[in-house]
Image 1: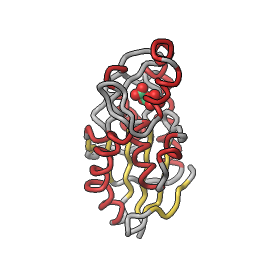
Image 2: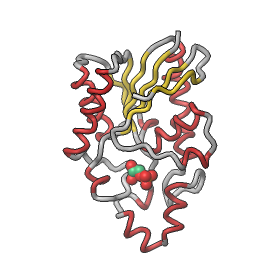
Image 3: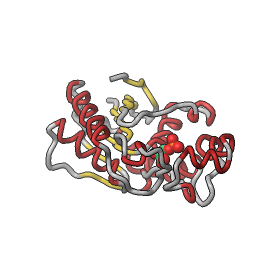
Image 4: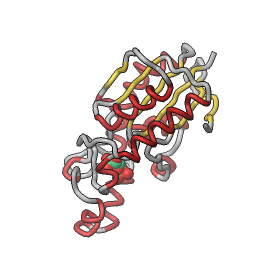
Length: 204
Ligand SMILES: O=C(O)[C@H](O)COP(=O)(O)O
């Protein structure tokens, strides 16, 4: 029996709207972001998904996204596991800065390297590789065994912690994963075999 993994990026946050580097800072969802989360909940319900296990990060934009999805799916009284391993990549000293102001200060190329290179961290923060180094062991120890056992697992997390998972699951190279943008509220659904390997990606 295969398991099902549903990954959802949080809906638009206040800082996404303001174009600020966010990382481990803790803004709320905007109204649009709440709508994106609800729409994903409705799409999952319409697709007949019935998750058994629920995971999110230690940040409120992802937690709130999961709550809204569950509300739309009519799922009540379940245990939600929150873990910092699923947090967004820590943007270090860039956190709270406007992305356009940062480009003006350090140049387009340097800011692109910080945002989209695999292993060059922003000052005081984490690279995608650093993020993967905490996200993947958590996935392998807590989530993968559930998928191998045929369970359906729903994870609400962040652009870069989800990139780390997508890279490992789809076997992508650093260049391939860095070209992959996951939109706010966007679900990615995989069927995972009993051996833990990807069987297919399902488009909702
Ligand atoms: O933390 C952030 O600012 C965003 O959620 C992700 O930003 P990025 O697209 O610049 O990596």
